[in-house]
Length: 279
Ligand code: URA
View 1 (cartoon, helix red, strand yellow):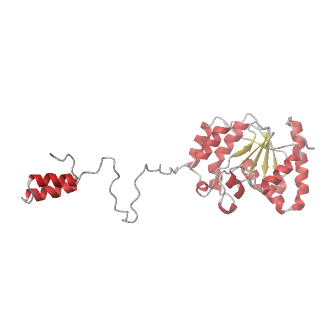
View 2 (tube, helix red, strand yellow):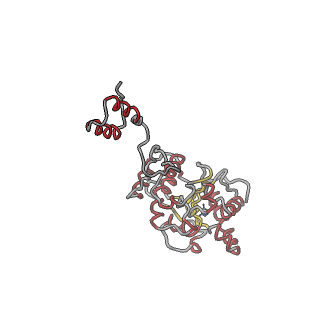
View 3 (cartoon, protein in one colour):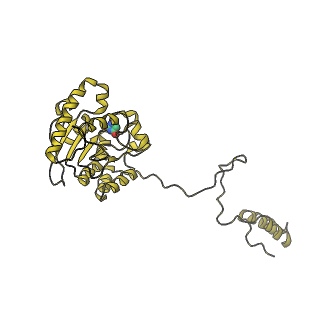
């Protein structure tokens, strides 16, 4: 009987001794049978394991992380291909071009009603937002909800909330200009798909990024300004607000924030935005 598949390395050794006249044919067959070849789909031999801890068997290799060398162009192209806010959210969640994603626990895109007439844009997720995957859910977010409630606005009914940046900057540092640029096409597309009647920017950072201005928030807050973007049928009224995180630290400025809420409520009425119970 001929052994069908001896191990190739064992075979060459056995053949060497047979050629040298040291083994007769029966011994050759017996040696072949003693060193069968590994099944075709067995893991390849590895030298990295030890007898105590065998090397892990090779599974399917994970897809290598694809880092784009032009993340802004990629973000633009991906944003343009999303035809709904839900699809855009999934696209942002899958996007690998922003380095902030590497340290973040979650991608934070938006909260609230997708057909809400009022859209609020903040800066970037903080620790609580990163943990829960939703914008403005920490202490600042809770204050924002209370402020909005006083004028009959809420994310349950008439407000949609997002940020300029979708991943938490480590240690809550300011996002860099590059991170802002990478995320900008996604914010622009959200505004395009949402087409809100009224935009509110929370804090200096979002206000400057959205309106392309350099004035401080104390100068801009509570003013009716205009947000313009190519592709929008018309400019959208935009009121900058003091950031609720700032108000948590600077209680006395709540009086200013109250004045701004009254301005926002009046503009909602002018624009035909339905407000709930409140003022
Ligand atoms: N601050 C922001 O600007 N956005 C959030 O989502 C939370 C805090």
